[in-house]
Length: 77
Image 1 (cartoon, rainbow, N blue to C red):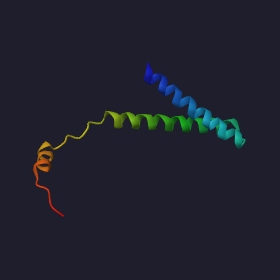
Image 2 (image 1 turned 90 degrees about the vertical axis):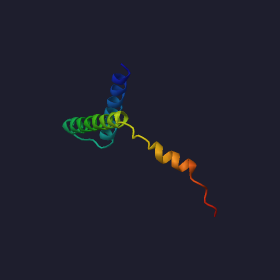
Image 3 (image 1 turned 60 degrees about the vertical axis):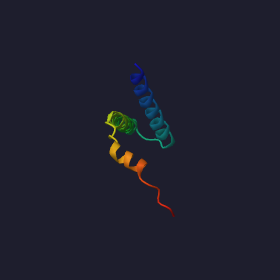
Image 4 (image 1 turned 45 degrees about the vertical axis):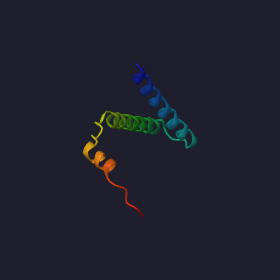
């Protein structure tokens, strides 16, 4: 449910931003529709990219290397 609400909020915010931009520079309604459709598509792409990054597996740490760092003698300067 939270994801659906977040998606709705993102799309609403994008639509309002486009409408505000179009109000500043008057243009035909078809241009407004095209601009809104384009912005909503970009919002969807951005959301999918964020989800893909969040779901990507985290790289495994090399524990042997970490142990070697801890046991290595300090180098005097």
